Image (cartoon, rainbow, N blue to C red):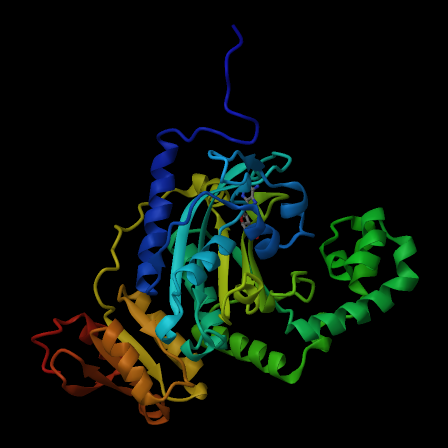
Length: 439
Ligand code: AMP
């Protein structure tokens, strides 16, 4: 009798390798908890329409790679339904956000997931048909600060920390801004015009894309086309003032937090609801499939799915690729902490100028093992106090004076007392007992 095997593109994970998988997942959970992200688990299959709308009908994923079937009706009154194994998790998370009205009350939702995804791709090293992703999304109504460049920088800084804590050496962050939907439409026209004279010299795919979706020409990997692509106009020149400022603020916050990055004007996403920041973390050790993770802002996605306005930013990281990268460099990773208690501190920047320094401070405190949430410089102090009171034991106030003097104001919600603490002593201070603290 012929022996049965795991289906092409799927595989069994066996000990001792599974121990490494567990340690990566634990480290991710621990880092996410420090940044106040909570776990969401969505179904592995969804209505096909979710991905058609949420990922985009014209993408490779939806047009070629989905495992879709007609689910038979069980009763005469029921209709057959087209279902799909999830090829990614952002659409499912945003569907859940809408379905459970998670934006009510003006709250920013910070959600992470860990789980298998399915795409009918041509299998090769680092590319499977069932693979695992670890991802996170920060999404909320505009009043929650979900549009703030500080959120983008926080997510990127968290990823830098996670990769460092996983002891992944030599990662590279590439970043770009694709602007608003209007910026992109403008750029598409500029690009289409620039491609007209040169497209005939390019590969067949590019010749087609030059007409149907010019942005995707920038993804072309054919070596002969690269010199032509280098001469094409850059999207950065088509951004409006607001998008330029948003991007500059993201980069300034990354500089302040000490996260290295490389600007890559070719990094784009073709769909209308992808806005502003886009990024990728790559690793040289992975070969052709060198992307460890990808992500960006999707300010129009909730509305594309029929939900309320809910700007957001997120990423998805390939767990299989992390394992491949790590297998050579296994090290002991820390224990998991859980997020069912308030954060140690909430940092409230008192103006937009304090956003970047606030991120730098949060990074310092989180590195020392504290669980910290961060507000936004556009919030009034009263609003920050209200949010902080629900989320954290203490609020750390960071205004212009505090920045100049290096002494911050800390208010303890349990005792109601307030204290001035120097930056050097802040971490030790916040690690002290909440109830018995003098402040
Ligand atoms: P994407 O959702 O296509 O932006 O992918 C995000 C990340 O998931 C990539 O950077 C990869 O690390 C990982 N990934 C995507 N597709 C696969 C696959 N077929 N096999 C393994 N990892 C994948």
